[in-house]
Image 1: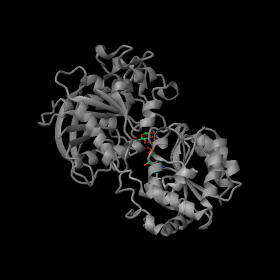
Image 2: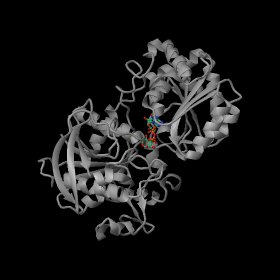
Image 3: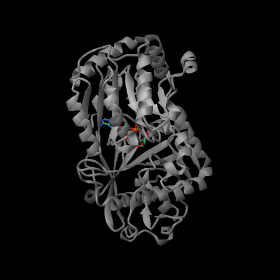
Image 4: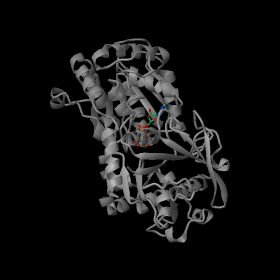
Length: 477
Ligand code: ADP
Ligand code: GLC
């Protein structure tokens, strides 16, 4: 049995901005089911949704500040959660990373450096809990300084760093290193320096014992300039210690058979009941209720990564076709405005919800016929897996985890019942439009459509295999 300290800046259902929260909420549970002793550590943001008891663990002095550790449990699981409590940095409402205008909190470097330093104290059991992890598993740049700082410790635990997204690196002006009292041993171009700046993610990439990312395809992509953002050389250099492990999904939360957030439960043998969810979604979103018109869905952060510009460029032509489109998301204000204008001009075809809405996300997965995910890059992506589980056919671009989890509907894959979606190659509106047309053709053939839906719903997206792979990584350290 391994003792694992899982370090993350978000975890569902405590706090979520994207897929990292889904993974941090479900992978530790899956590891616990494999009899591992996993504890999660996360900042105590004001917006955390804690249910149940909160226990005081200890106080400690970190970088000249008084920090407290509190303890709770992951709702519905035995996993212990340690909260890093420093109100001056974390007791603010809203998003963990950005303010109401979408601008990064000005003291993010200080906030997450303090978090990392506290994690190091816990990892070395200088908090006297009689619990020293074998492995510290860090995730994304917010925890990147942990492997770096631990590398300076005698008798330290092993470290794993998981890249969920290379596009977010935690880059700060070079002078920040002094503000943060970063040890000089770490501050050089082969360490935390990146073009004279301080890079948090490099802490994970340079100093961790093993690096993982969230799909095999993305593991290869980030070793190229297009996806590596200047760190491809470093990743290539460390490729012996780099592997892709595909994310699983939480089968309890995303289960059309038991989902309490949708109008009508269904399974692959009662697929016709999915229609009830479609009508309910059309009604809720103010679209004409029509069982026959293909209903497209999209849920996600409205940022360049997600190919929102491709959608905007495709919409004029898409709107000439018989279809409806439901979109839920928030992000770049420019995208939000353009989408709002289109939704206002075509109220019978486009329904838009700008914001974050868990319940509506489930209703869209259950009610839509087709899910659009034309990402320019996608380390793993979760919605294409949720879609398949809900009999909603994903249209995805061939990149990262999308390429690894969707099987394109081609004559031979339809024939052997492995096809589950539609894949296109080029990040262009033309290529996306082609796949939309392909989807509409397939949709008009009920027999084939049901084949695709059934194959997707039967696919195994559970954490079981991937959790075993993480365990193998821990065991090999
Ligand atoms: P990323 O982590 O890049 O945002 P993923 O596909 O891995 O992309 O995960 C996104 C997660 O966040 C999914 O669970 C998705 O349902 C959820 N999500 C994204 N935007 C919203 C929103 N506006 N409302 C509700 N859930 C959302
Ligand atoms: C990131 C990626 C997404 C991935 C998620 C969880 O936010 O953008 O593709 O699914 O992390 O690993």
